[in-house]
Length: 381
Image (cartoon, rainbow, N blue to C red; front, side, top):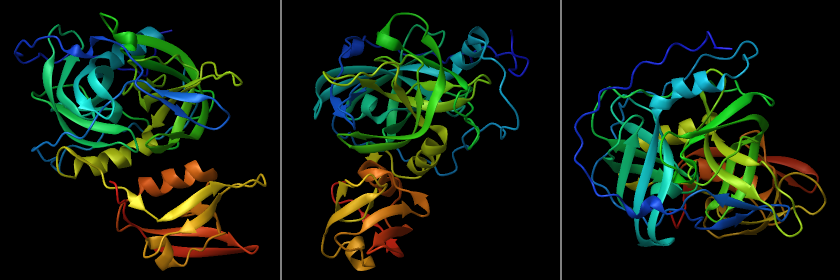
């Protein structure tokens, strides 16, 4: 069934002449690191990055807003894979990065990007481009890569914005907040395994919402879980619904261990989680990592089966200390949103910024207490 809701895709914008570049070292596929999360399974980030690369170009605050679809009012139609692939294809790009021997070693990475503005802004995962000495992008229908520039990135949230010269590109449309439901059909689009030709597409459903997983960089929250197949090379690519709207940005897959099975479990950073972070990235100096909020506590998971995170230590002269958070407190909510374990608390604070005022709700001696905290800059950010 061809979806009447999808307008016919316009032809790709006529590309500007592009200087021929030598193929990069990014053709090889390698999972650079494996990150653990609860249950003994592991999470593979789909491609790697390396150390910070400074960049002189600032992001203009008046950059066009992200395209967001209308709020959902009824059920979606069945997903027509061919129609959605044709519709979204012009907004998907291959992202290739030469790495200069940073924390993930020398070599190269290949991932996927989503065009988010008509003047060449592209969103991808930070782990695809972080530390790159050179970034190249190949657009749909083109044979030659274009040079790209790293504008800003956020390692903790695994998001980055890069830019190519030109105009008339077709930006993707993101789904409206609260418009994604468990069971919705979705399709992952990306350059799986760096295979030649057009991107791969895989079909699945939204398996769960608001997942949190622990990574070596901290934690990722606000994730969409899907059973659509996601492979190395899909990093940074879109997970889209039946209307061709971006539901999330593909970032990680679960792998089983000797004692834990994990099949068809992939994760995408939800549009609702990603868009505020990307807006913040647009407003900061080019090439620098985003500043994250800092609380100043040691944490452990509860052992009694309850939700929340146990405060095991409060560092002196930190926001937590100033606000009156105490060792033994159990943090159960941040700004009214429940905290689901250590990973959830880390991710919630990291999503905020230095100077933000947040309300931390703690359980202390069977009493609920709301504490106002002004966050500081994370020392290592």
